[in-house]
Structures are given as structure tokens and as C-alpha cells.
Length: 375
Image (tube, rainbow, N blue to C red; front, side, top):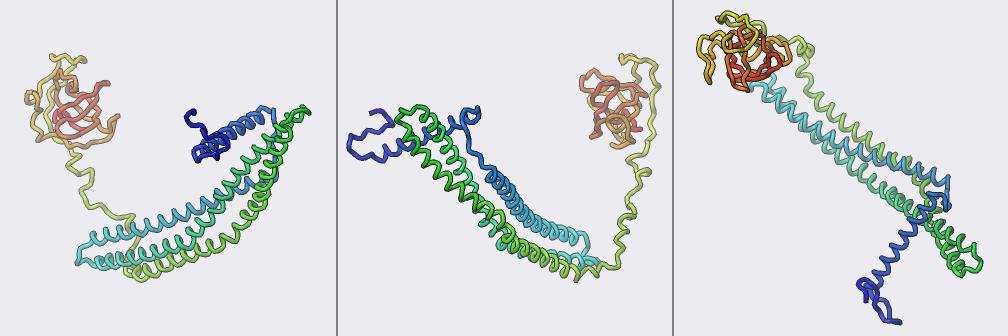
């Protein structure tokens, strides 16, 4: 026998293996004919059953199903949001407790606020529990009806395709009065038609009922939502209302005019200009070694002492955000270093450590920070 095909003897019943093989072959054949029918309908060679009223109800069903899923998703997001707010409140209060010294007048206020935040967290847990058990869980059961109808709609489409396919075959056979296949084709068509009309009638009745049923279903869900949220807010208001008077004398708008305590920027050593002796400027435009003047110390791998180097901040300007003026000529043949002459204004991109990143006349490279002064 060929592999995969039935090998029972004539007159004997089919084995389970044979039945399985025949089932697979039957499904493949049905799928092929359904695809063929769809192609014929698409090119206008065969007709397809159209039920305008049903199609309208189907669109209403799909819209309502999406609204139901979105509503349940919003409920879940609300639960997560309430949990997140509660956790953030506790975290914030812990930070306030750490802000004040234990002998501060507001230390006790901060600790009481933290206790209140934890009580509100308990209230949030009760809210989430009630919404989950009395709203989200019933909605899961309610959704099962929509999923079942969705599957039945798919079955209807399949049965409609079969009915149209058998109708098309019957019409083809009826064109030849002597075709013996006509009777069998008519029987297949009537059987397929009965199956289609059964599921179509069921859906035509159930879909409108399910859509109308949303009003009565949502009433207790809506009531649960309002009651639970109102209870949660009431508990929060009661808890926080018991301590808010402790800060009643504080001017809450004073934060907008709070004065700085650190050294003003104009007076900061980070922005002061330090005296430095500059060698005479060169009048040449090229960067040949002969045009450079010498700094106080010869340059090697390490620049002169950084004791008088400017701070790593300056007035903004240029592409890099800061500009610096060259105090000395910087002679270098290294490809990653930036040569310059006294008086050049260099765009500074980064200022970290003793070597900065700068740009001059389109060339970028590193330069010793104590050879320049920020403008």
C-alpha cells in the first residue's frame, strides 16, 4: 500500500488511521473548492449571497465589541493608575521625612503624612479589589458571548460560501438535462442551504439582542465604578484633611520667590577671569612652526602647570556653546590635536580635565586648557 493511504480489505471497516487520513483529504478538498468559489465570485463568474440587513447588524456588533474591549482595558488601566499613585505618594512622603532633621517642627508633620499615605494605599487596594471582582470579572464573562458570536459569524461565512458553491455547481449541471450528477448536486445544495439558514437565523436574532443587552449589563458596572471611586476619594479626603491644618500657616506661593543661597553666578570663581601673560601675537596667517611664539614653558606631552587654568565654564557662544581666546601659540604635529596661535578665538565643545575639545577654522582636536582663556 502507498504510505498515508487506507489499506483495509474490501468489506472490512476502516481503521482509525484510515479515518484520520480520509478526514484530512476531505478537509483539503473542501478548502480547495471554497477557495475556487471565492475566486469565481471575485471575477464575476459566480454569485454570492448578500444579506444587507445582516451585514448592518454585523457592523454594529463589531463596533460594540470593540467598545466593550476598550472599556475593560480602561478599567484595568484605572486600577494600575490608582496603585501607581499610592506607591508614589508613599515614596514622596519618605523623601519628605528624610528632608527634615528629627528636631525640626515639620519632621513630625512629615512622619504623619507618611502614615496617611500608607492608609490611602490600603484604601487603594480596597478600590482595586472591588473594581476587579465586581466590574472586571463580570466583564470577562460578558465578553465570552461576544467571542462566541464572533466564531459563529465565521461559521456563517463558511456555510454561505458552501451554499453558494453548491448552487453554482447545480446550475452548471442543470444546463445539461442528461447529467446524472444533477440530483446529487441538488441534494448537496439543499443541505448546505439548510445549514446556512439555521446559523444565519440564529445570528440575526442573537446579535441585536446582545447589542441591546449592553444597557442593562453596564448599569451595575457603572454603579460599582462610581461607588468605588467616590469611596476611595472620600477616604483620601478624610485622611489628608486630618493633617492639612498643620501646614495652614505656610505661604504656598512663597516657593515662587525663594531666594538662592549659593554664590551668584557673576561672582562665582567658576566664571572669573584670571590674569595671564600673553606672548606677542603673530601677524602671519599660516600655521608654520616659525610663526608660533613660545609659552612660558615648553610644550611636550604635558601642558604647563594648571594652577592658573580657567574653570571648565564660560560664556556661551559658537557651535560648542563656549568660546576661548588663545593665550599662547600651540605647536603640534599630532593629527588629533588642534594647533593655534595667540589671539585665536576657539570654539570649545567639551571641557573635561586638562585637555579640552575645540574647533578652529573647521578643524577639531584636543588642546591644553591652560593655553586658553574662556571669553
